[in-house]
Length: 249
Ligand SMILES: NC(=O)c1ccc[n+]([C@@H]2O[C@H](COP(=O)([O-])OP(=O)(O)OC[C@H]3O[C@@H](n4cnc5c(N)ncnc54)[C@H](O)[C@@H]3O)[C@@H](O)[C@H]2O)c1
Image 1: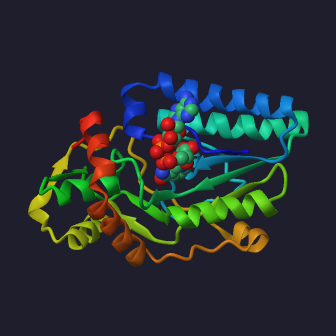
Image 2: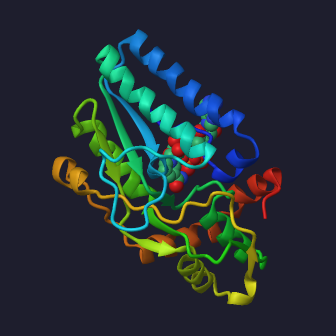
């Protein structure tokens, strides 16, 4: 069983945390109980780098203490720890993966890259938090899925594996790349009040996954971003109704 399901948007966890605790913590425990009862083999729990909090220099290794800051990250940390507890308590075959920021096709348009790309394709402005100095590591969704498959097949029970993308960018640098890819200028950027408790930087050390799983990100950010913008340009029928329903801009 590979468990991806979660309430996943940090901004929504700031305005209403209840669904995040219910889905991410109770939901994960419900699935773990079901897997245990049914004698399912391996259970891979998809976690996040956000469980570590923020790091100004260097990169986190898998044994770093968890210090989440947002309600989303705290609920994911709860689910991550309960998954590992089921391994230690019940001997279940659990593997946890912690990844960096995903991007790619079919990404729900509430998240930064699809929101900004779809706004720009519509000739609408994009909202940039604070001064744009926050740093994230970008991981193409295909690399993430390949990393999860490697952990499913070759990970050791009770272990945590990092899946990173190898491209660290400030949000301002990212916006520059998005503007370029969509043929727009900086006049399309609107600076908005920073996200509450906005973590400055996330950075994963992927040495363990490289050594044990043979994991390496393969898609360059340049190629991945060009493909992503092309996908959103060609697939309006997928994202337009979603964006309208969620009233996103
Ligand atoms: N996208 C990222 O950058 C990123 C980074 C790190 C970790 N993750 C983790 O990867 C996983 C997938 O993220 P995503 O970006 O695809 O998120 P997403 O919000 O796009 O998808 C989550 C899925 O979970 C489902 N879901 C939510 N609540 C549910 C419930 N109560 N019962 C059943 N299904 C429910 C949703 O319908 C949705 O299909 C999540 O666990 C997330 O925490 C994502």
